[in-house]
Image (cartoon, rainbow, N blue to C red; front, side):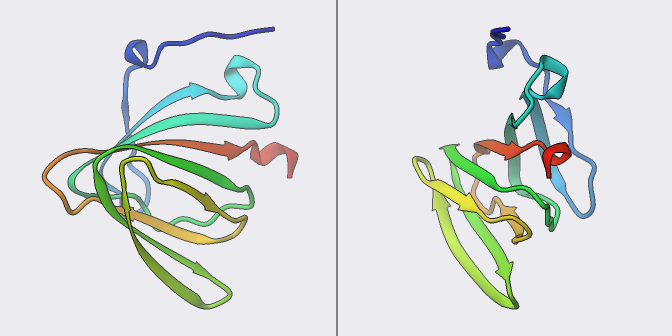
Length: 120
């Protein structure tokens, strides 16, 4: 069954996970809406904020809608740090440790599509 949601009508929820600071999430499409393989969320990282240092069994695809920041990833003991900005599309592998930072004066906003952990 098709499901439609407008992100403007979804209330952001503060993400209090690990060492996350100033992070909000809008859960657009999840298993609650019938998604069986992928979930779509929008994250808003306040200026000076950061996501938690995370690692998951599922892949992520991220698209930066607004702002700029920094992304740190670690895979097989190799640390990679990149600058990210509006328009960037990012693939994060399964089990790749990752953390987003917003060191700018405007919100860092991105779409994150992840695999449903129940299928792994």
